[in-house]
Each structure stands twice: as C-alpha cells, then as structure tokens.
Length: 257
Image 1: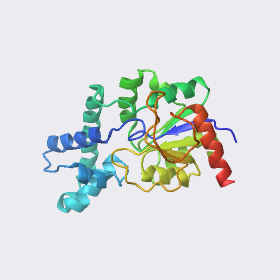
Image 2: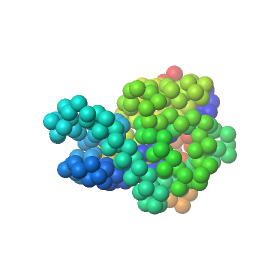
Image 3: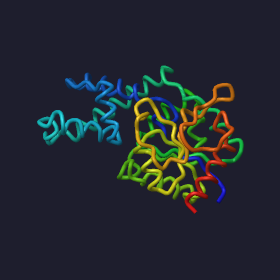
Image 4: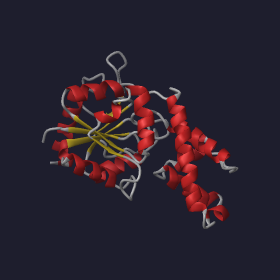
C-alpha cells in the first residue's frame, strides 16, 4: 500500500514545547492565586496525563483535594487552562520556541511531493496555530488537510481516537499513513490505530519505552546535521525525507503482513 499521508503529533514532535507549556501553567496558577508550582520533575510525571485541563484536574485531585472537591472547581480548571493557553500563545509569539531540526524542511518537501499532511494532537487548536504561524507563516494551518486537536474526540492519547478521527476525515486507511510521535502515550495511540510510527523522543520523553516503533531517531535531521538512529529505519540516510518515510513505511507494512 502506498504512503499517502503524514500524521504529526505537535508537542515534542514539531517543537520541544514542554518548557513553554510548564512556564505558562505556572504563570496561570499565579494569576488565579494558586500556590502551585510545577517544577521539571513534577511536570515530567504530569505529562503522563494527556490534555492540559485534565492535567490540572489530576494534579488538584492528588495534591489539593479540598480544592478539587469544590463544586465550582471544574469550571475554574477550565478558566485556568484558558489563561494558560493565552500565556502559552504569548510565549510562542515572542519567538521563544522554534521547530526541531528537519521539521520545516520535511513538511515543505512532503507538500512538494504530494503527500497529504495532518495534525493529530491532544493540545488545543489555538496552541497548534500559536506554534505553526510564527515558524512557518500565517498560511501554515492551511497546509494540513485535517487538524485533529483539542476536544474533537472524548478520549485523549493513549487512546487511538484522535488518529481514527483524522484518518476518517482524510478517507484513508492506516496502511496509507505514517505517524510521527515523540512520547510513549503518543506511540501507544498510533499503534492502537494500526499506524506505522516514527518516534523522535523529546526532552521529557527520552526515557520512555518505545517498543513497537518503526524507527527511533534523535530528530529528523538536516543534510548538514545528520540524525542519530537509535533503532529501526532504513540505512544510509542522514535526514528524514519523503523517500526515507516511504522506505520506512514499506518496511513496516512487510513486518505486519
């Protein structure tokens, strides 16, 4: 089956955004008068919970149960998350976060060669826009045929729902697509959707278990800045190109045949 579409996760895959997210969460907590501080170690653990609002609720339930059980706290968590999203957008608009090596090149090459592009993420559509437009231009959102983000499905990763939602709208089967992820939860979601998956671990996910990935690379690489191949993948390449992904896709399909 021919590779027809690339399905991109966002946070940690397109850019190493998690420190910007962590800063935005802490800023929002201060706005709401909360004596909460998420340091790097704690935030790394909280990333196992998919979704920003869900992360706030989980933390409150475990670390501040009296507040969590307040009947109004669910609505307050939504307001905190909205504040956090605005702050995150401000951080990205400042140019503080750039795309990871090879991301812009691969997106442009894939478009030029007729591969369809889609987003499959648990972050909000506003966060997707806040990352893409400063880095790729105001037209960047239109480069993606489908953007699956936020609450368009009830169950977030590691559930496969977001991938099924995206593929349904692309009218493509899993054997015609390839996912790009950075975390164990993302990989689990993609594998549960029967997708071959390329993993480029992020700062917070580098110690995750990536069993089942078609390949694990340090990043997508550039012609003058080769990636490091940690596992899987076709030999003889220095950067991820559409042809590299086609070869990876063919190999993954043979293994599952």
